[in-house]
View 1 (spheres, rainbow, N blue to C red):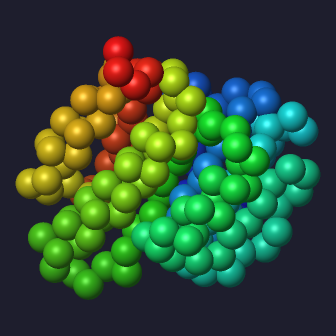
View 2 (spheres, rainbow, N blue to C red):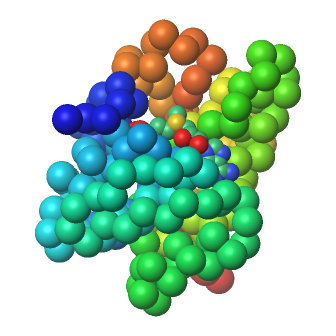
View 3 (cartoon, rainbow, N blue to C red):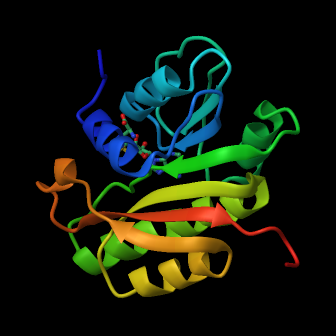
Length: 184
Ligand code: SAM
């Protein structure tokens, strides 16, 4: 099964933007209950490697995939994720992390942005040159600065809106592709 409706968003992002390829090393942040992880594992296949992270417990994944339960904003959890990549760089960092929404648009937006910044900074330290980063956010005044921060390091950084997320109107994804090599 697909574990969650969120799976359709990744399938749509995949069909339009080709995020994942067979054999890819993928970090999936905010992975529970595992909709994206199951889709990603199916695409990357036996030769791929998936590291899934969430605050919440999650059923184990098949094959080379590893689930880490913890708060991604904690340094020790990020160290665990990098350890799981066994010294290799990731090809793709995905973040579908979302805070517990309080209902105040501004607060929810800023909490999303802060999770995105955490994920972006991890991605910059963990991706191979040419690698890809994709994170979910809620629209709001800091979206432009998040995109600019990504654009400093990637060939392209743009917002995309899967049709599968039309029901949550403020939700969108930042897609950053082609991480530039350092000092270039
Ligand atoms: N991508 C998932 C799927 O396809 O099933 C759905 C993810 S759900 C929209 C957002 C997730 O982000 C929640 O499971 C939540 O626990 C997680 N999350 C929020 N803050 C987090 C944090 N600091 N560290 C790890 N996970 C976090």
